[in-house]
Amino acid sequence: MKQFIYADKFFLEDRTAGPGFLEMKEGRFSSFFEELPTETAKVIDYAGHWIAPGLVDTHIHGFQNHDVMDNDLEGLKVISEGLLSCGVTSFLPTTLTSSTELLNEVSAMIGEHYMEVKGAKIKGIFLEGPFFTEKHKGAQNTSYFCDPSVEMLDKWQQLSSDFIKKIALAPERQGAAEFIEHAVKNNVAVALAHSNATYEIAKHAVEKGASIFVHTFNGMSGLHHREPGMAGAAMSFSDVFAEIICDGHHVHPAAAKVLMNARGRKETVLVTDCMMAGGMPDGHYQLGEFPVEVKNGAARLESGSLAGSILRLIDAVRNVVDWGIATPEEAIYMASTAPAASIHLDGECGRIAEGHDADFIVLTTKLELVATYLDGVCRYEAENFTQEEGLR
Image (cartoon, rainbow, N blue to C red):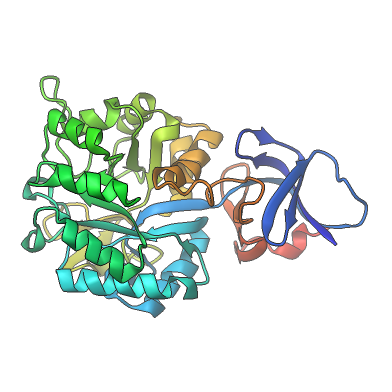
């Protein structure tokens, strides 16, 4: 029997449409119809709701009291399952600057076992570090900072079975240009982060192939009218992506709007940079080797500096709409298609497109998460809504 989803609005790959019916075949998206094309079909009825592509978080360190750097498969499974409550259906487990030995072990563990994770799908690894500089270190351990090494990247790729999809570095470090060229040739997206680089240095890195600016405005040289710095570079170059953390703590809404207006909503990527305290109550946690206190919605080191976030990606979507700086269509795109495109995976996730896995979320008109589906199967439901209420 054919299976369809009915809803008031669908965020399709090239337009919004609805009300109507979206067909699913064998766990994949098929065609959209304004009228039900057959009388014999199972229809999952979400009247009054919106259907959007599953969100893609390309920068996330942990969730529900587990951290990627714990190097623990069971913890990774908890993170994966927990992310379904955030509307996330695909993600990149993100490392921190650490010892070469631990990064080797984490890369190998994820590369070997990622298919055993049954929640949000692991699409690759994001190595955030260790090729940074101290000026804008953030919550990264400076003891392990070093110059970019082609040999180290090749080792991580070997250990992970070529599963490194994104790596961040400070472009002012020695050997950065050669490293960027090598990484890009090996299909690894290069991101610029935790850097005091000048505009010209950032420009050179982009010319060599760097294509992402990590958590723009945070951990980078700021915009000055005589030295635009990394922040100015993030807003001015063509064909690059700029991450931004829209939790209301990392970046003022007006600054987020400036970035989106300069970069364009299709090249702005909403990320969480969430650490292990995501989905947990206020209290004391760890981010890598650093103690962190979570209080009033923010995670901070003992110094008072922000240490990642506790942001859910669906809340970032709702925030930018509530702040009046993006439409629902733009906000969803920035949290699904744009992040997938930034790591060259929009051909398999982040879009409602025929042939793609039927990974999608159900939203209220206020962008509240009702349900999360993987491969056409409901895997998460909000407590105040049951799937039975939606069946015709």
